[in-house]
Image: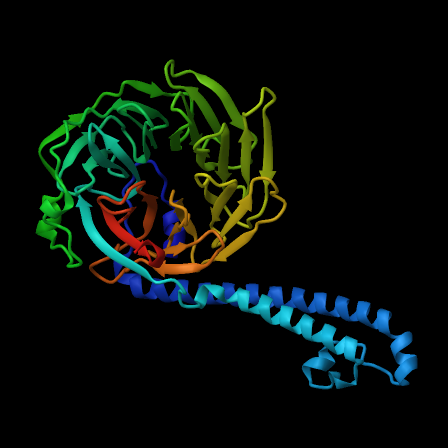
Length: 471
């Protein structure tokens, strides 16, 4: 069984994830060969489509020119544009030659786009590892960032060890450990205005609990011990784990219990007065924060819903499913609507709404990420072809809107919204993640680093990403 198959069969229900480590090399080779085969099959298919378009253009050209041009020169012209590929297109009239050059130029341009993911980055990117957060006893499914709670920038992590943790963003201390769930904690999110946390779990519930962290001690990066490109030892990593003074919480303020299968994600909607959850029971639900009651049940997907995301400023929700579709639910008017999109050929694993951008970005097990214009969703405006399934993606709030894409093969790659490849996070034996990366999130400020990633090596990593235009 391949590593991808093993991971897909692993439920978000708190069971222990055990990969066959001695077979790592063989599995890597299997994945590489599979990725190469898939990529070349896709290239061949697109080349066939381009050749079909060339033949159609050739027919149009012949119809246009066979009367006047043939009589004028007294010559028979080739009826196949493949002739120009053989260097025999000189027999075409001058206007036909110019048109053929344009066609060939367009053909080369489209062909180059097919392998754009293999090109080196054109923008200089500086990447520095700042912290590792260690303490979870099993894989970490999700990481989130809070710019300030009682003066402290914080991060939250959700783990398969049935706990969620709140950390100081500077990496010095675990402040809160939540142990109220009886199953894997699959997602975590801070309330936009209040000291509340929303988590979802394999125990079929979502919990709201209070994050009563102490006041800020005004600790700044230059006072911290782990701001180095050097790899941390296991003993140093353990010291970054739960310390004396960590608050243990076991009881939620409110439990949401209307789902009858694993709850895969939970998010606050704009303003924090409502929440949206997604579940393997094939439904997504909108909840009232104050009362904890269900306002809407979003049904219609044919298979399990893997995630649901809310627009940061509008009453829009996107749900992603194993049925290869994602749906956009519009609650901006009194008459609610839903649109179904079928742009992927495998399970849609994630989708996000970029801040200050009329777009939606989706990722799938078909190894692609697609950028869509919310005003015209007929076709994707950009497609990024990867070499493994997409686990999660995150988009920065800055003007560049940089995408961080967590792939199923331990890679985290950075792209812009036009699909331009920027960089890949280091993944050597020590600096990067040792096993698959499950999630990534951007910080709204860069005081303590601006990108956080987590994975099944039981660690969360803080990175400092600097684009050339930022320096």
